[in-house]
Amino acid sequence: MQPAASWPDKAAQPHSQDSGLCVRVFFPTDRFGSISSKARCVH
Image (cartoon, rainbow, N blue to C red; front, side, top):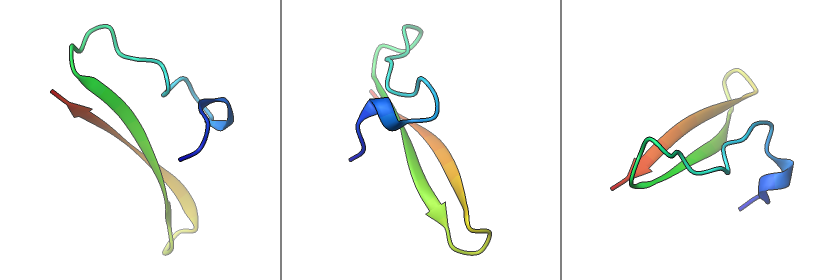
């Protein structure tokens, strides 16, 4: 798990609009060689 300081955006900050735990997961794509981001919210 990378520290929040190294993240490109403010994904580390909690979403006030959501009562659950929201985290953004970054994973490299082998086909395009780029970084894709997905936001996951657990209630």
